[in-house]
Image 1 (tube, rainbow, N blue to C red):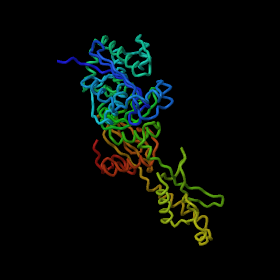
Image 2 (cartoon, rainbow, N blue to C red; image 1 turned 90 degrees about the vertical axis):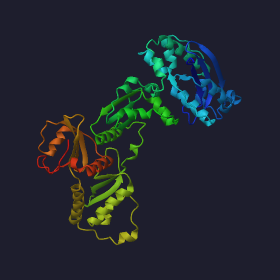
Image 3 (cartoon, rainbow, N blue to C red; image 1 turned 180 degrees about the vertical axis):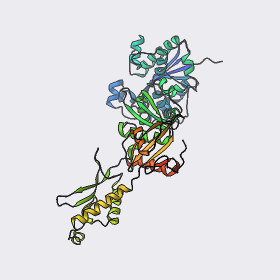
Image 4 (tube, one colour; image 1 turned 120 degrees about the vertical axis):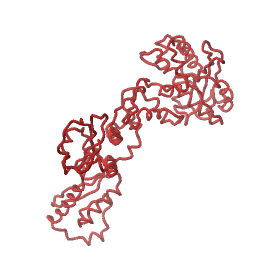
Length: 466
């Protein structure tokens, strides 16, 4: 049987992501598991300008790469060196994604087993202050010469790899290079224990950066499977590569139902505003329906922009929906057009002249009051009772006057006579229109889980399955 060999790789590039940047230098060192057997390196013409910041880091200039071969001319040599060998690098996914992308541009489909020396060092030499190549070498007394050049960093990684092989009494590296090794797909800075601790249950998960700040919140029916999907595949976008580099930790919260997980995800994103959450940020409610009184005593209804922390009668995600809602109130309660501010340019003078006589103040204000009471009367109060995280508890989602009040869990042995008593067993959360859309859709679909606020639990005719 042929002895396993390793291709230790380091590259320099024009930027931080494989889809928009190119390789400027590459070094490949072949290691047979005991010693170095071959070494190769070259500058590469990236066919684009090297940014000043990259030049400052690597010292590679546009003039240096101007006469170097483009990647297409060296792709055969690169493939020859990588073929049937384990791809080894410090922060392996970075180098791997660039080379995979360059080979794909050259017309080749290539994959390989990978070994990350960051992850291997964490396992074999745990507890060190840092696992960046420079600081790791200082801790392990490994010489680091010609840093931030492909040849120098590849040589250092090769020495580190040899040392790790010597220290690896537990056969960690052998386990890691198996294609099925999960932690080979994990971000380089993520402790494997964080991933191993994830349950295969419904819930919400949090990704943290090196400063313990939440950078992403997600919900899942199977937390472990969903988290793993973030790290699979070979996408080379800047967003994905930056995301993987920024993940330093994971935590989670198990939820009883998918609805509670959805609501928790939404409220946490609104509260924490993580940098990598984008989808739910589209559901911002930018307009509100307001009521105010002028110095003359007349009450007005108005559509306007929402400010942070500002309260309103109703909120809307666009001006068109807000205007339609106010228009419906105006028509239904025959409110004088002049006391409705639609947030658009004023009416033409010709229309204004037809409305010169103002209505009686008290009669007009009564119409406004009736319209507002109508809005409030449409807001239902109810609770959704569903299964808990265990057989000994139930989950509760509570809505009061058409707004999400809170959610939580109560023990099955607690006796509740009136639904309003459920408020004592839930945690308060902020409400918004998107959350209420989720709750209303669920309530319409699973009516047997909904309890009306107007009736006691004992008098409810609706059967609820716990």
